[in-house]
Image (tube, rainbow, N blue to C red):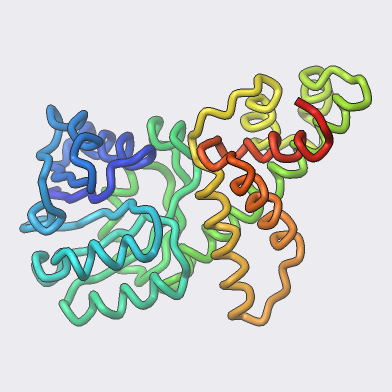
Length: 288
């Protein structure tokens, strides 16, 4: 297939590479062209997003937030440049309401849309094992299967916006669990236990999780090199709270963790991995 991939960041780079390696003809664009240049041997790098999408069958967006998606699709001429019948696969993490608005606006151009945010981080992106949560028409989901197949496992979860709703649920669980793991491990260290051994001891029990294994290990090693930034996790928690409010749903646990991530960002941790919440909780307890 002839594809466009718009947004070559920490996640976009390995995802676009996998689509190239799967045999697709890929046209890529990023606001900072230098981030897309590593793909030059595999894909065509474009200076504008409108140029990248001309004549493609499907265009994937992997951008920072809903405002960025809207700007690229409608202000940068992407919707005008695509042929009628093109599919937009928005794999960014944005608000469900934004996804529905984008789908409606694209419909005026006879362009179909699915919201398909992902989970699995840069490791999953590189290995092609991402969990992909898809909202939109079932027929569009089926058309997009060749794209999803190169990236991970896709599940159709409902109509437009529901992919983003599922991603918010994912991020609520991730953000809350990171906080629980960090707080528990710090408590053990404060009491004199070996944090690494505590993590080992509870692995395999009811408290085990991928968060304990991956992020818990990063906490043990004090490795907070960003795979997903604290600011991204904070954005997702805030999107979850805004969506919950719009539905008349109370989410007090998410609200508490949103405040903790916000405090961490305010205290200079914005460039750390999301597991860097550990640093904020350590600071509160006078620990290194």
